[in-house]
Length: 142
Image (tube, rainbow, N blue to C red; front, side, top):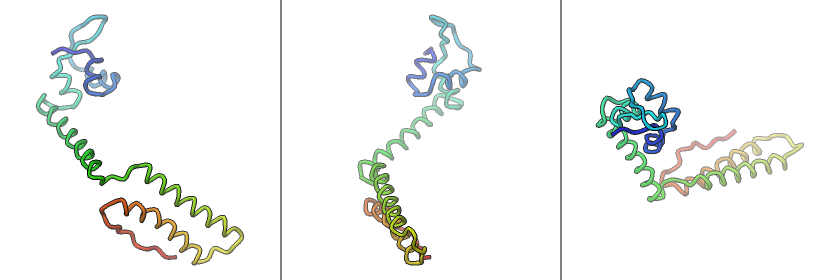
């Protein structure tokens, strides 16, 4: 099947400029309005840098399997939503900021440093409660 770059781009999700570079060495047939028509088998091999359509399909199947694994983790609730992570990080930094501001003009003591470390540990502890994996962090002390 002969396809123009715009259709190949639509099917593969790869930008037209990238496709043009990858297909520069391939022979093409002129199409309507100056379009270059490429053999789909040769184009896929050049795009995915494989020797055959079968190898391109195998590479696409691996990519699809990886995507399915991510979707499966989402369904099993094994992935922490990014907003939860961002909220926990924000809360941790606000807490540390409040501690530092409260200690303005005071000497930076071992107790104050350890309090800051405790606040740093509070965020990941919250994330670990959302995850099935146990924490492997060592407790830092100054």
